[in-house]
Length: 342
Ligand SMILES: [Zn+2]
Image 1 (cartoon, rainbow, N blue to C red):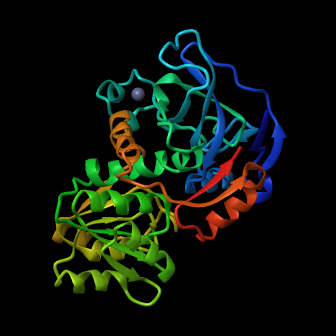
Image 2: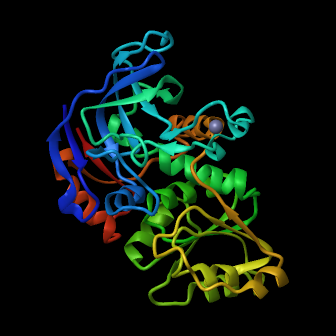
């Protein structure tokens, strides 16, 4: 099968168009003929290499896929060949204490398709049947592949981990990322007042179209001071920060007493300047989150399928142009998801 794979970590030149063996389904697996696959920041990290990440090469990236079922294993009776589907991109072992509680992203063996397991930059991809979610007929593959990872991450970050309530002031840093475009819509839907930041007025205008109430250009103003000013020196109830080093201290400052800093990433680096006095004196909560359990995934996708939320697609390119797509993401030029069609 045709695939874009890496044989070693490095720059975008390491993404190679190759011919790989088509995967065979295990008894509980489904083979998907991939039609569209969306990029995540994770794809850039995996291509470049992450500490402790040991991959079997050649490795195919890609966590967010949509396509049709090509074949199924012997135990799969719920799904049929030809059915249009997307997936929960997380993998959990189903047997550890956290899986038994339904806390799948806490699984001691948790993995992500496209990070630890072969992903969707390929004509075919193998997933367990528990990961499968059928797509309603009226949605196309490009639109739907842009949804799962961004929306499930944003849902768990805001609703489950962040305990968002109607009326909360929520700051979403970096309005253009896939998760941010999801988070703006979810926070608005939940009744929050949504602050969005960006270095680009154009991206802020688009954030407003998604529901952001207050737009702050951090290139021309100090965003944490703006948050304080606009909230009459109270501060925000929650900051969603996946930027990391560049924003961490400002996020602590922007929060009200008892506020929550929710982190799901560290795009600008993992080791920020910390200010412990701010944390105890303001009694802040620092909350980590990653991915989502199957219940959260189904909850948020139901709302996508009801068109309460709109997956935001930046550009669509053929799989062969994966390197160009990675360049665009690495330079933060995108607004929403970059999608490759297979
Ligand atoms: Zn487990």
